[in-house]
Image: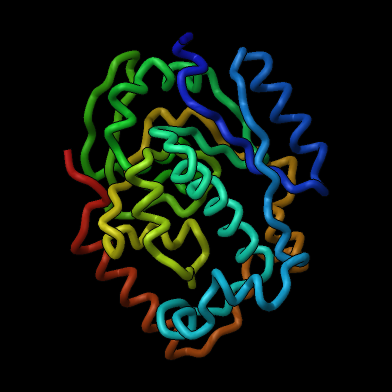
Length: 247
């Protein structure tokens, strides 16, 4: 098998966003990268029973600073859909991409590193805040694998192993946004890394799907002071006491 198509590449896309999918398809086709579109879960279409089967309001109140919006619930369920697919089909390693990104020249080079990268649970392929690395490990083609004190809080793109998917699915019900939950990787014994230089970045010509659901805001920030302080302290302690992975 050609290294460039040595693992599945999944693109998460809402049925209501064909322009995003068209942009992604053009970029991936130009690079000769095969992909599979995964229909994203639209939180607005979910019944109360469907939400309750995956999302815990009780745990959300205990461990996060605000109630998740329907957009955030749908986003998390979209990623869980891929992790479950990997588990059901025994897929050892995959690349997961959201549909609002720009693919850089370095993207093709990650496929040459699959034998190395598949050993790690989850590897971030983008960071919209440029968080510093805690440690670095040199790879071929001038790439570096890094770990963090502060894990990037986006799911724009990442690689994931079957072992990583199993760990994430061990949380039977979620209660934080998916990118924030990945930051709390210690709870699931999940190791999280980054691949630098990052081979993808956000396509800022598209509005966030979640922001569109929430009237221009990425999340519903209304919360109690106690919930906010409790969450902030937990996150601060995690960043001070834990590295996202070990080399």
